[in-house]
Length: 297
Ligand code: GUN
Figure (cartoon, protein in one colour):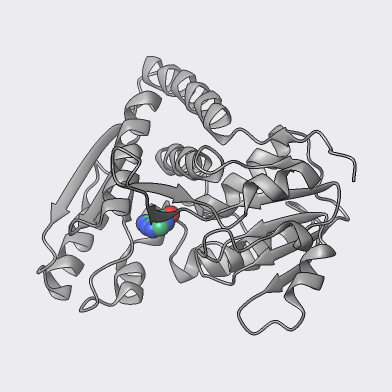
């Protein structure tokens, strides 16, 4: 078998480019007398992954010239108290957009919290109004991971039109909105297959993909025999796997067995440094759009 050269879809560099573009835009806004975009984030508890994500979101705000506010609460906050914090952010005229970092402790209904967020400030795009408007092809906040995947492909000139996109995973955050975007004429314009835990002949479905997106959170699930020669592979997985040889005691593992899959690919995302940074860059884009009332007034 010929070893094929593959191109790394460098999300880290692309996200840095996007942050720089946003920062320029923000300085233009400020020069013309507009206020800086302001993102707030609610973080409940001390989940390591969530802490890292939220810290990176705050850092990204700095790089973009945004204001940011981080509201931290202990795991024992009640659902009613958290809903009240959401209400305060809804009403705060100084805040353009905000997120509640997921997952939440089990005694709090994530859906209830998401539905309490004013959809006009829902820069995660998780509120049913944004989800519904996305499905209907209407202007709205698009959830950041699917949006980041499309943007990364676009910036590397990986065409999606008329391609067969196979998505592993049907989550509300990634699989479902990505399927919706990929099939829509004004976004992906692709033919889409969504696979999940009850899909028959999963490997065969995957081998039909021109573009394979793995978003199931199972380390190294996608093996070389599931990927067609010349395919593009996008790895959304970021599972912390114990690794005593690392300073922090773990490494991030993607859903793709990179070393054996990459040689078959035209394009592939690394983990880390692929989809993750793009997600945060798209959250920044959404916050800029919120500050400009681009979707809602
Ligand atoms: N948890 C994992 N991904 C996300 C995300 O994109 N937004 C929020 N709020 N929580 C998450």
